[in-house]
Length: 400
Image 1 (tube, rainbow, N blue to C red):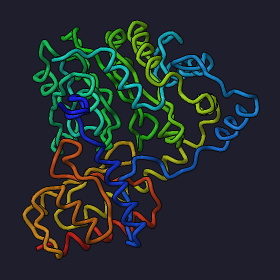
Image 2: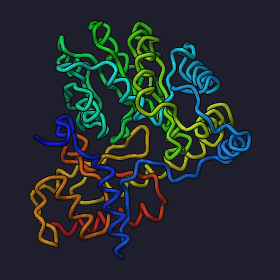
Image 3: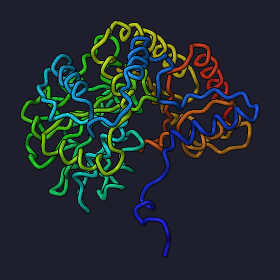
């Protein structure tokens, strides 16, 4: 009998972390590697947020807090949902966790029974299916390919729903594609969900504020108030506020669900870092004027990367609406051979050869459930992006 849990055999390590780790190892060994795998802003945390954390330390705010969040932070989250999304929640409907990942995991652990199905559009963030599996559920993948702008169609959603469906995980703007659903596109999906009252919605809005051009962000319970009582609206401070390492995520939803999530957290991690919570309070209530400034930089980088990748032979790169990722197709490279002798049979082979032969680290599309593609994070310097794209162009031109 194995010492390790059989449940562990159902999941795999995060491929995005694996790529980042491999790039760091090669760099430490002296290889010139440009990493485009990390899913975090390259901007520093705003000064007012850092000062709020220092002030909290000086005040002695270093003790345990309420299990799922400071009352002050929960109220600020309620105010944020009202201000940004027109959603009314009370602090009793809010949960704060150690990052958005813990919030999603708590909700799945608190609700899934063996055989319960969770609909996940593909491509998806790598952690969704494994968290479902750890919680005892069954992920049901529904393809949302390049032909639909990486967006799930209402027909595909309708076809995936069964009596066993418990959750639909929705992510807009998306990791890994950056695809954002317009209000009309989202309304078409919520119309389907209104016909299936047993299906709950987990809306991962982590990239809410990272949108470009005239795109307007909306969230399911905002578009369809009829879904309010069966929607968990999830968010956090990691991306918009450049606070990935602070580990603060949050969600709002029905009190019964929030209470169940609190029970899970009380017996696992207990409260998130007290100092990080006070910092998050300042992030949500302090000046927001840096967000459009950062977004302008991200949009410029997006446009540059899309143009450079589309100039690479065999690559097609759509223009995403938000986040800081692009998800180009390498269909035109499949079947060719690299100068190092690697047969490009799939996107994993493409990404492996690109790293080993050109020193560019990207995450292959199969990790996100849709091939043949790869993910590029453009949350790095212009110089890195230009040189990385130049190397990708050179690599693609060298394939035979």
